[in-house]
Length: 364
Image (tube, rainbow, N blue to C red):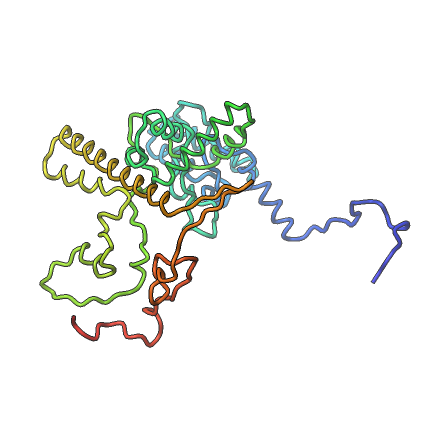
């Protein structure tokens, strides 16, 4: 153990130890000067992930396009020029080859890069099953905000029109509203950072002429009543529907057709199959939207009245205190009632526990 006094210690904050040229360090710089040189400057309007390049640093989709063009070209001077270019690159280093083979990307020219595919959206070479998901472009988010705030459309309607999940639509509207409020107040916005990040991610571009789909919007949410495994006996001749399956899990559980975020799309598809005209379908859709809005308004009004009746609010100097009358009987006999007070962890299901009988033992 070595110890020195503060007055005798060197005030230098850097080390004079010679840097060791290890094998890993040599390999790193060999890659940086070779295939890794393609990552010094990001591709314009495209991702630049490791999975999009080959072992020699060549962009795979650009190489595939050049090969397809070479096969489709006629024999003659044009084909000879391509061969001469490839032969001329053989004497260059890996860095020069990757730079020379990179096609020119002029807007509107035929040498633009082909669109990205699944192989180009894999940032981790050792995890081939991970794909970088697309994000909404700035124009797409602006259109969502305009339809909700300016046109006054419902979130569910905008979700079906734009192909964006309802939770994401709500998040876009909230963030866009805050952004515009900050702009009015003169607060600085990180626009350069946002543009830099968006340029490196795959995006869903908004096009008014075509109906884009950003993500699935009708995924069935997992209900807590459907978590246990149930073996339900039934006769072979019985028609067992999704409504019957919901009643097996819980008598109050709605079928899958009613629990999805957009059940109106199923009704619309049935109307298309039945042969209704577009005008009739639009009329029925407007009527269903009106009835749904009235039902939701009545439910919210009833909830507000119940809240005002059961909740007692006492204003303090800095906070407000809310009191509600409760009873210990609300938790039920087993203490797991939904009306009980406090957070209850409950009892785990035993359907996957070893030694449990999982088949019916009697017919009711």
